[in-house]
Image 1: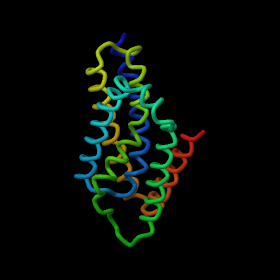
Image 2: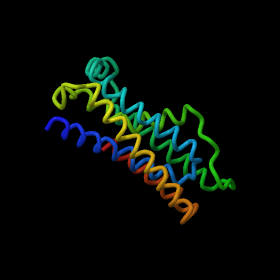
Image 3: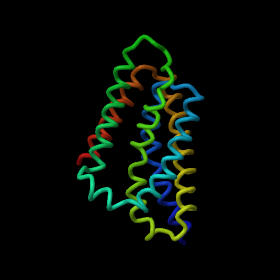
Length: 176
């Protein structure tokens, strides 16, 4: 029963990564970058719950900032960048800098940190749980980016504007 709960939490955490990857994939990013971003997201989903488990409440007491506000800023910035990119003359996006990849991975894995704070109530096997979270989010991110690329090829520039708008809306929802 514990393993089923871990899988359900992993899929729930991965839905955020999937939806944002679907929107971000509309930029038409190269397959090499799709693989790299999926791996980075997976790594973040491995380490963030463990970080939340071991450091959790002390960080939130030390730094008086709502993590949802950080996610809001990151997602709105990425959304604006996507919309601006849609008006450029380039057909395919250049490879995103490593900092951008890490920002994206951070944005989609902040909820994993929160889950890590309560990980003891979900499972006693923290490492196995983190591995399941990592693989689930990596797979969902990969699928979302690939589907976003296919949408881009089907409906073009409008899909990028739509994807950027969706990211900004999701960012706003984090404030509510």
